[in-house]
Amino acid sequence: MNQTTAILILLISFLVMIVLRFPIAYAVAIASILCMLYRGDHLAVLAMQMIKGIFSFSLMAVPFFITMGVLMGSGGISEKLIALADSAVGWMRGGMAMVNIVASYFFGGISGSAAADTASLGTILIPMMVDQGYDGDFSTAVTITSSVEGLLVPPSHNMVIYATSAGGVSVGALFLAGYVPGALLAVSLMVGSYIISVKRNYPKGQPFSIGRLLKQLSVSFWALAAVLIVVVGVVAGVFTATESAAIAVIYSLIVSVFIYRGITWKGVWDALGDCVDTLSIVLILISTSSIFGNLLTLLHVPDLAANAITSVTSNPILIALLLNLILLVLGCVMDMAPIILIATPILLPVATSIGINPIQFGIMMILNCGIGLLTPPVGSVLFIGSAVAKLPMEKVVKATLPFYLCMIVSLLLLTFIPQISLWLPTLLGQVV
Image (cartoon, one colour):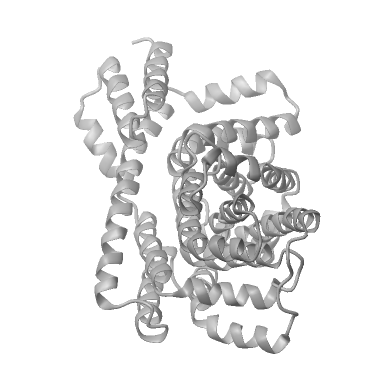
């Protein structure tokens, strides 16, 4: 068996199927099977590796966090978080754009999904912004770019997937590491929105009132407390990420049904059906990606990739930029979860070799993948935003260009200033 031929069969067949628009889970599985057949491996190993890929206590947190996000998103939380954001930043020039960005920060901490953020907040905020005189494409661009904050602000099931793929990375440390980068992204988007709002003379909202802010904070407290339960519980060592996720589901159910009364028991049943649909896709992807990742390891692809990258340059700055470029390109053709599952074993050793902490690299990877969700041809959040706003994708992409710049600036700051990601987990003893 020729190792080079096996690698080519694995990677080329995978890329061909991606170009042919195969579902990503099938592309990963078929490419792995073709490589295994060439290597002469018994296909029983396939089933064993798939089971091993999802046989993880940490991964049990993923369905719970997905369920929590769906329940809270269906329970009337969106309107309350929008009102809270409006009371905090709506007074500024382009106030509704600022509200959109801050509401995404709050809601992202509950849903952990950029797609859910866009679908939930976008259906409310985009028509509201248009009615107040904002351009539709600008409103959509603000909505989809700010939704990426939800990937960084915990609890994010993508962080759990990264921690599992990276091996030995603390989920609690990742959760803490996401807060400041999420805020950095929010501030950069607000600066971009403010400049555009001043140029186009978009309106201001109501004058700031501390009384109104405190009132909305008291109303939204029950929703925001869900995040505190998860993060504080994990960081304090009261329970694991999986246990915290299970508790958060019960808490979300109580808040949505009995406190906010935004969802009925029939609605809960429907929400659980949505969770099963989403979860089935995620688990199939994780199981098939585990085969792919195992083959990459057996064929020494991470070592070859590291050598290839370092042969181009030995400059750590250029290598860091190259890692970001690779992830951005992958984001244009693949969805987020498969990038994390496939690219982490290959690129993480390269990142650590130039001194990038695995926690920091995880935040970098998630933001890169988040930008990929907004780029054609596979940008799912871009498609959702266009559909919600009923605008052509090309028009939305054009309006998003200034915000891409804001996101790239945030990414570069995260890459070259490690303390943005590591300060909070270091302060609380999660990173030594």
